[in-house]
Image 1: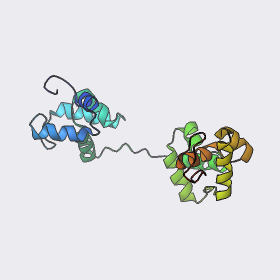
Image 2: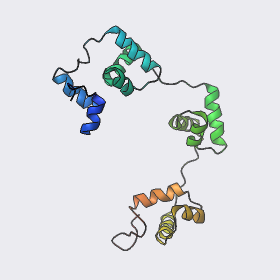
Image 3: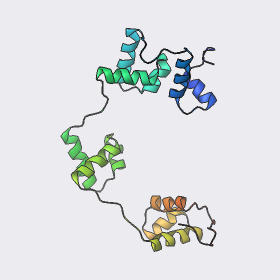
Image 4: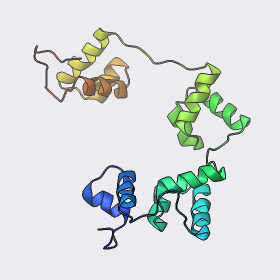
Amino acid sequence: MFDLGYSIQEIQYLLDIPSRRTIRKWFREFGKLPGLSEQYPDSLKEQCLLSYANGLPPKEIEDAVNVPADTITLWAAQAGISRERKYTLEEKQACLKLYERGNSSNAIFERTGIPAVTIRSWIAEAGIGRGQKRYSEEEKEHCIQLYLAGKSSTEVAKLTGIKGETIRSWLRKANLSRGSQGASGHPSV
């Protein structure tokens, strides 16, 4: 397929192979791709590094120029190119204030573009986490019974004051669909 002009990405998709790295390894073993240590033209290397530094993902660069993503990542590390964004103290403090006002890390991400995982690490570092609400088994059972009685997860949330997301999580964990029950005749939680 490669000899017929198919890209590594196309081969991965058509053959349903989970990892491009595996395909590249096979190609290197059969001499179809240069090894990681082999030389590419400096101009191509510079083009890849510039694209990487500008935020293009290695897989997209690979698709464009047919240089393996792991080679591009290796070059970037060797060149000391880091795409890790540094945030100012003001940005961090603004996010923490938004959190203290009741916004979730995901809502803050939507507003600021700063990844929620970064915001959550700042929250933990500042020791201001709200913690996750814990519910009793009786509360879980009550919600599941309401669902099995024909209420939607949204309706159950309105009736109980428990987030719909939490209720849907319990339903997934119990492997429930409308009207299903465990072997004992009760939903398994």
